[in-house]
Image 1 (cartoon, rainbow over the protein chains, first blue to last red):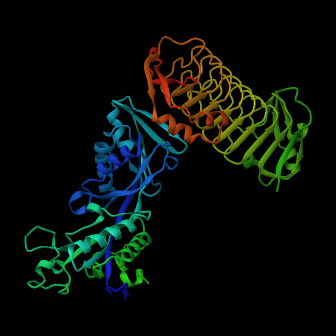
Image 2: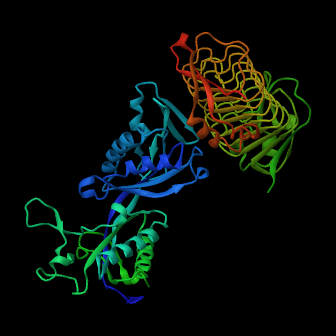
Image 3: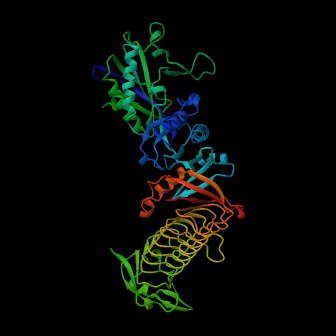
Length: 295
Length: 273
């Protein structure tokens, strides 16, 4: 398959089952909601070392939020509900509770509920107030700028983590420009996040290492500086490879993001080939075949 | 299919207990069977047909046509469906109701929405004393649901209330939110009777005017812009035009905490015009 002169490999992206939730963070201004969300989703690129994968899904207009203030929707993915619970408590407790003027609400209902305000309310030291509006409970925790309003619990859903595309280009600037275009297109879609810095990964990994105890190491087959030395998957004209990793609430969401990203990357100059990362299909239960996605 | 209609033939001479007339209990009954249902009228046993003309229809949309403040226990224990009273209702309207929608176009007597557990009660006129309260011998009042009163409410609205929300578009009498355990009482009218929050433990009384007399056992915590108020107003949107019209006002309220004589942490939120 060739799109705009770019070869689409006959391969698939291998993704994993994860557990995800969505938070809605509001604040006095869109800027402060973004500050809290950025802090909350910091150091959350990969479950390998961060405990979760998180990112900003989109900004929310005041009419879309529970309290009528500007907000941000954040998606957080973990390997299990238990992992996600710990991350929620720590991240919301350290990054949203602490952030001036913010409130935090559940953006997802159903599934296994996780404690949100229910875990943070003890910070109120007995001065916290519970309010149940309809079927949803909120906690009002007194803080130094007023109150931190936080929903008691948030729902979860089975989700997909690790959808990906690899953009192979004739130069590093070309790879970066194409990746930026792909990221911009993907970020228009709901229910997905691109957890890596700027949505882009340069350090694609393979499983294992020559070093004992290291579970992942550089994907030397895609490192252009090694292509004459190691067994390489890169043609001589490929000078740089960048990857975009996608976490989504459903396989369809991930596939839609991959489709949008590939289509956008193929319109950029200098892109030679699009491929995807997998582990032979043995590790992840979700397989996104590029040519089926783009069909 | 239109709803089942029970038309009051004439105002009863004694108080009439209408608790058997619930949508869920009338399902599958024809007009004759409904007419034969037993009611307690004063200290006597009577039948529905003695007081009401039955027009067959869907029991899940029950309409009681006719007005009397002696029609007690309407919607007592109701779990679903809808009851509309085209007129006044007596005492214990919606007592211990857990679901459904109950609308009274006129006034309601004392203990309306007492021990309400869920569902919605709308009273077009005034409500009597102990709105959302606890009947004698009960430790807890309303424990959930929503009550909207278009007119005024009597004394001790929200007495021993445990959860849920009451909106009174008019004024309320003395000791509103007395002994409140939790929940929210919103008073939008021009008068708030003396001593609101008497014995209050937790919960919220939101009001627009100063009470006629205040308890000294509430601590003035100052004026604050509470984000929670925005959340509350949005949650209640569509239930009260009067409340909706206030949604654009700044959410700055004067907060009083008490009743300290009771070791309480309830709050009176004074939201002045």
